[in-house]
Image (cartoon, rainbow, N blue to C red):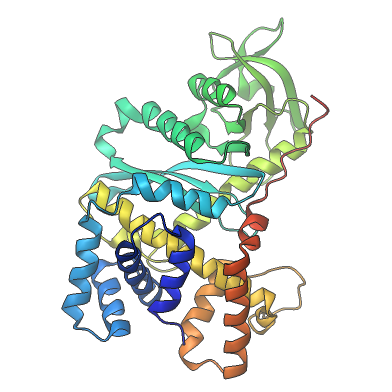
Amino acid sequence: MWSVDHTRLALLQLFDEDVHVARVRSLANAVAGVLNASVASIAAIGRAYARLAGIESKSGVKQVDRLLSNKGVALETLMPLWIRHVVGTTSRIALALDWTDFDGDNHTTLCAYLVTTHGRAMPLAWRTVKKSTLKAKRTGYELDMIRRLHKWLPENIEVTLLADRGFGYAELYDELSWLGWDYIVRFRENILVGGAGDDLVPAATLVPAHGRVRKIEEVGVTAQRRPVPAVVLVKRKKMKDAWCLATSLASADANDIVRAYGRRFSIEETFRDTKDITFGMGLRATHIRSAERRDRMLFLIALAHTLLTLLGAASEASGLDRTLKTNTSPKRTMSLFNQGLCWYQSLPNMREEWLERLLGAYEAILREHTFLCEIFRFEPPVELQK
């Protein structure tokens, strides 16, 4: 049976000797509580851990509460270690950048999540701030996040940033170009666009009809004609609004750029896993006044999310995923996260043969670390020789 020790072993491998063993033990206790509670509530996590540890319920709740307020659990120290572990030796990644709100506590969180091959973006870095302060400081928060990520990521890694309309501004394009990152960023349809020698017109007027894709290279955007390598414009049948995409991938095929940007929406699925009370862990319903406490809670959830994803991968590696399918499709029909959650909840009553297969595959994946490198590998739209 899975225990706190399994979680502790995973975190010891994650942080190696960079974090004090006592701190790892405290994190493992709380993450085990998250896994068993399946709800991002301080009380539920504490009680779930207390059941595992055989201690009084109130003691478990107090331990989790103290952990969230513990300044020794410094994300400035832990997050670079976390990033180093989950990225591993991957040579190319795609990052989805977006904000998510917690209106009940006047919080909003800037999230940078890794786009994966398994349908759920993986939490990588985040920062919570008071929503009421956002108007004057939003650009600064976003550029600071990108600079931190550049500092924390491996030196030679190739990064492609995917971001929605709120991030479509010239300062961001300039920063990404200076850092050497590629990008596909959507911008608003009323932004002025003009090719070399052309008049500036709203991007909406350049969107082709009937779902066709148009790419314009060497473009000036805004009234100041800030240079962008290329703009891609499309309005397909199921799209609510046109996609106006600024990209550094000027020589790539326009349809490939559109498909690559579409992968950004996997961050929305992960937000649902974290926030939704019906389909996820219900963090939206948990009131946390302190931004620092919320960020530590998100760290616990990120650890739990990753372990469940690895357990889902073990399900497929051991062939047990076939027992979850209700159809004959050769493709994956349940995300690895949901497979992991399903198996974790089944562990107490699982038949012995299945348990041995599942945990054997899980331990191999954790030990070899190759799986994370596989799901984070990103093949950007193919460009011609630069």
